[in-house]
Image (cartoon, rainbow over all chains, first blue to last red; front, side, top):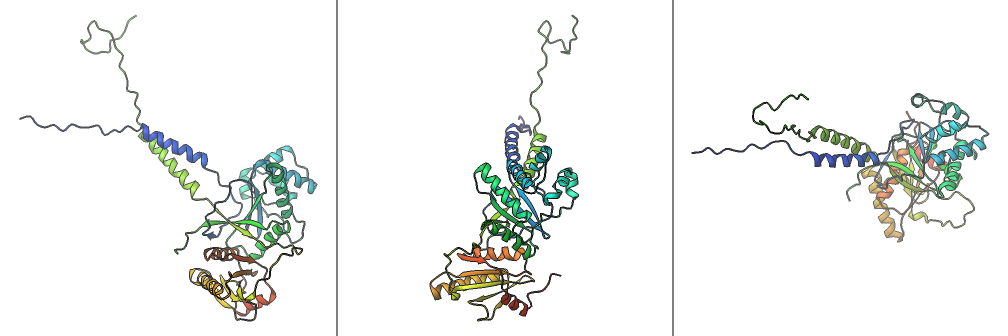
Length: 205
Length: 181
């Protein structure tokens, strides 16, 4: 009697299709990924059940923490234009290289007078540099007020869109600081703005 | 030219010398491993870090606006945000009714807001208006928490208003106006 032989199959599988899919997904995720701007201070945002995502462009963000305010605005062209207007207002001269460097600066928090020094730093030095925050007080014409105002003017001129302002505050930030920022916004009739929050699970109904 | 016979046998006597065809298959397992590792990395770093935006509209500070409607005291609820993550609330005008001390969270503020808004709706037939008054000793998280609870309780009318000295006294009386440690 002949023995029944179990035929041995090769365990190797064709990986080509799998490899294709994997790289397709990889490309997708790499292209949609946006590098997270490094915050000069640690701002732990409060949580809320709001699910509306932050818009991707045309935003000015005020990061508030430890009593300091940092300013960032989307778009390299808007940044450049804003700095030009600010330079005129505060009688400062910036070189072309400084304009270019400012255009790629994600977030900053220094007075206009020390911007030269700040822009001369390398990205490594910026990490350790203690930024004092943008000067803000209750007078009508402080620097933060002008930064927001000029950024709005620049965004309006370049993109013909109203710049959205959002506040990214730290959990532990005391209310008076927030109140100052809000009143600065209200002084230029920005009565509608966004608070950046992290997502928390909605309560069960 | 001299050629080295590598066919290694006498089988091809007189036949053509064939070069061996190497398989074009490459083992893709390692490549797929790497690709999936990177996918996992990018997935985790992108989608989880997406922040959310809470829209907030402040009342117009301009004194010239004339279209301000007075809200009846009977349907306005005032929240005073104090220190130590506590708040006080009262219905109507300050001083008329004693404020109640409450905490943030599902059993404190949320329950109260939902109950009171139902009561006011039943009593006056109109929605309840919440006035938020953060004191200088409260922090940003408290303010966002209150706005969030209002959103959960689905209250239409609310605003953030500066606190008055009378209300600061109320907070002081209940020991909710302590300095930060």
